[in-house]
Image (cartoon, helix red, strand yellow):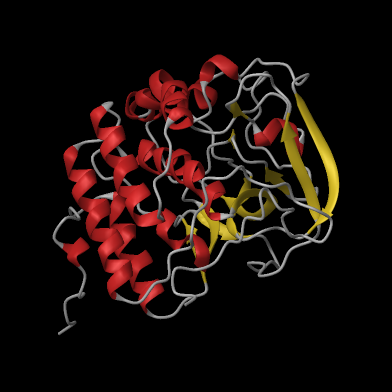
Length: 320
């Protein structure tokens, strides 16, 4: 018989739910993984391809909009899919022009954190896009290649759980909320995680496709109904996240943020319990949470390191 997993998260994880991936994340971390590739069963590596563990030098994206919180469409800005937007992108911004966006080419290594691979053939788009006219909204679609796009702090973009590489420093960011539909869960996770990544000295990167997706059969109207929170409240979630402030350490900040989002109605109380269990499980297996700083994030230099912003030093909680 297979022994039970020794995690508190088991009791707070429902059966037959997308969020059961959370137990796999914990198991991988417990086994000593340095990278986790989070993917769906209908994605395949491109012919002759492999999951990269090192990356080309890329471009650092600066969002020059005047308002303090910004949302970027990586399909359009980074990979020239000018009519396409990712699932979870605020619908009121899909026709926004590019005048507020600048891309500064910098010879930098892709920083640690979360690296989202695009998916060729059947990219991750929402049900509204899928039900649109193919003469205007192309599918199937293969992205143009190009260097990776690294998002500057306070620039948001939705990423998914379909082809995503996570470095060990960001394992804490992987918990999927379980009181929302699976079509919403990974997107809510992406926005929540980004609010904390920057404080931990980590980044979100979008990379040209490593995978091709041949999508399982879906009911598009069913997907539309499941995705309604994305259409109706993604922009408000980003606004709430923007004004929220982290506390003195990363686990406390994550817990407090989940409570904050419960109070605003984005998540339910069960998710507050689940993230508490997930964080405790990580701590119990010896995971080292990165330290966080409340100081302003520095910019990336050509060396691939951050320039000081008040001499911020990012160290692990376990570096003592």
